Image 1 (cartoon, rainbow, N blue to C red):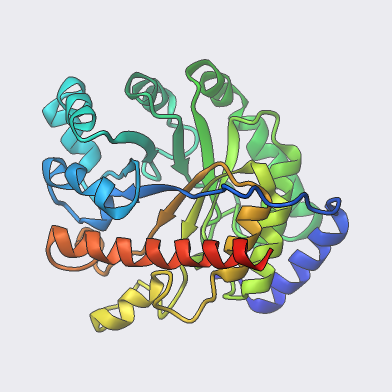
Image 2: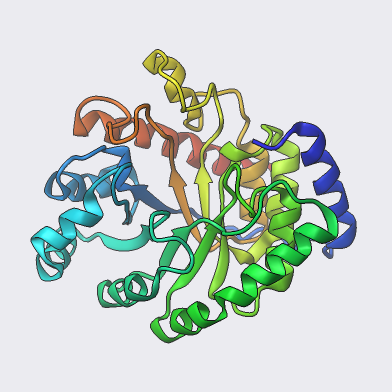
Length: 308
């Protein structure tokens, strides 16, 4: 994570440099478009996972490859036709494919694969130097965007949006980096996957950042840092990454998402340790944990609407 001091400085600068007009009234009938990460179920079979998607409150699945999950590899094994039939049978869409392994410059064939599945979002990470600030950061992001242009042409052709997650130890990490990515993007097919886990756990600043990013966000990870995910710890501590379990108040973020009439995906998320395990044992128990967080977010949304 970036430090709180860096977060405060960057978001303050972003507020000044990227001031927005007074917000419009939130849409009364606004609701989240929930997405389920297949990696939440570890290496469980897609034939077990897909029937669970609707029970979580979601309508779509986010397909992860190894090592976090292995469902992308499972699709290759079962074949696209069988996977498409499985989705249709359970009224589930393929909403997203996560591909850090391929990276932002290795998605050409994956975008065409996504197009065949009717999937419109691929999440990946940025590429470039880390730890930059100021004009050096802006220049590095400009170079990254320039290198992406041939890939964005394919994204436009296939109807796919490449969403870059703000990830630790990455070019796109800080609020400033997100601001420059939004300002410099040449196409709406380049967007942001916002992960609060990788930012200081400041509810008010997170809400401000959401307002500043606005429609440039394609995925919002309902995911907090809790006590982290890179060391072994008791399961109850590990689950503190989930909304409604850890200390982060998602209320301001939910209010901001409603205010901007957010139309992207919302994905309840966490990482188990080690990667590749389900977040809890048993497919039905994973579904119950995700649903618990969905209920928490939905209640915050109701509270926000009532407050109006």
